[in-house]
Amino acid sequence: MRNLMTPWLFAILMMFSALAQADLTIDITRGNEQATPIAVVPFAGGEGLSEDLAQIVADDLERSGYFTPLARSAMFTQPSSRDQVTYGDWKALNTRYLAVGQVNQNGNNITIRYELLNIGGESLMLEETVNASPTALRAAAHRISDRIFEEITGIRGAFSTRIAYVTSSGLGDNTRYGLYIADADGRNSQEILSSDEPVMSPAWSPDGKKLAYVSFETQRPAIYVQDLASGRRAKLTSFEGLNSAPAWSPDGRKLAMALSKDGQPDIYLMDIGSGNLQRLTDGGSIETEPSWSPDGRSLIYTSDRSGGPQVYRQMLGDSSAERLTYTGGYNARGQFSPDGEQLFLIHRGNRGYKVARQDLSSGRLVELGDSRFAESPSVAPNGTMVIFATQRNGKGVLGAVSADGRASFFLPAAQGDVRDPAWSPFLN
Amino acid sequence: MRLKPYVRSLTIALSLVAIAGCSSTGGTQGGTSSGAGGAGAGGTGTSTSGYGSGQAGSTGVSSGAGQMADSRIPDVRTIYFAFDSDTIRPEFQSVLEAHARYLRANPGTQVILQGHTDKRGTREYNLALGERRANSVKRYLDVQGVSPSQLEVVSYGEERPAVRGNTEEDFARNRRVVFAY
Image (tube, rainbow over all chains, first blue to last red; front, side, top):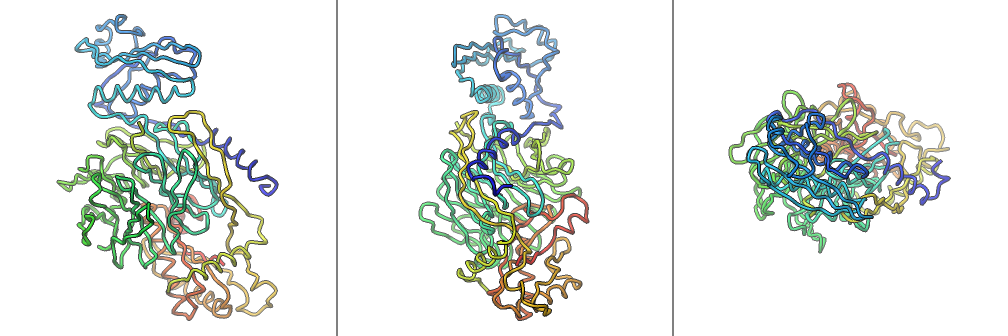
């Protein structure tokens, strides 16, 4: 069948099926019982828009685990500006914060004016006007979520970020693999690559403009770097053996990776500009899954030099490494929190493979979420959430858990399996 | 023990010969997106490369080469491993010996040893474990007198499972090395 299609026709068909089916949905499984009550009232004048802006904001805030949005059916009134607000009504509902707004549409220019109120203090915290085109309404809503989140928590919001992930459908030789990027809420997905051979380990450049990934499309693994705006890409490495686990340095100039060209997999640094390779580890054991410290002065990686996989830290310029993980026999794919004080990793506990957080100063490890097959943890750029891959109802899905473990949700695809998520850096 | 670049090219050429009779072909599309935040923009697909996929096909060497025992690729082309192990199990030694005989008798034939793991654990570490399994098979064949130039290791880790499912039996069927001629 495929032989009858021209490559262009095939590409176009793939594009349409991708647009229809690749979005991820959100399924909140555990809200945070200690989350702060907030009400986001439907924005007046927004009824005719293609997106329900206030609902997007409420969903963003709920997903963060920090907030519990009030159900619309529980609202006594639906004010659109602070002069319409009766504080006592909202105090009676135990609401701590209230967001109200109104939308004006003038041709293709949509103006959203919103206010954030502190109910207890009966005070205005934030008022702002946002302009958006009809096709960028979701992005505008995510920006409003970012502002509200930061105003209340003091933490920069990460709702305007994106995630990269890999999909697969079929089995064995008939498996089809796709690399996608989507908004952090799983919507607005775009295909980056599709292939009959495995694609894995997407990694965002620090400026958010490129993805490095591993593709087996030549029937051997190779590391590619693809520019997201142009689609242009370059093959960086295709050495004999593993070409695996690319990780950008914080300055974007180097890529750490695992190569087995010299025997067992070791960690190498490639200078992207010159292509020069520097070998960082040299042993008879497996070293893989490199990840940079936020200051760019050290790397962590997984090594089985002690018998099973554990996470080690090596300062650049040193040849020796310090073992960081001692809890249990399997700790792998570590990643620093943005402040460099915590480690997120995959830990095998009594009930399977879990996302875990380890405090670097105390060494204490805490399991997050209740998944049995967690892998590929990737922390949000503001450090509040970790996205990971797991299994649910026999399908590969993405899961996310708050850094404190209190809130979690899943992002399943409409069909097929999803895995290998990578959370983008801040993009604005 | 390293494979030289020309051997790799030869392996690719031979595997292309091997799948010439198969109908399975595919392509890879590189997509483009509009800039960040550009909602509703679709990717434009461009075919960046064409290649065949397929394994366990018969090579030109074997077809029509008569009925001698060592002139046919052994039928059993997959061996299985215990959890977290790269040890060749005794029941699969005869399988490896049959492949060793075939490869010694056909020194112009290359085989790719594809290493696989079950889905448990992290993907990148599993890629390394799959390579370790395939290397274990490679060393065994090496001891049996097979020329290293006939052998290449490619690990797929957990990326190409043979079966779905989360039972111990499913996991066992995915922990394997496949002889891909």
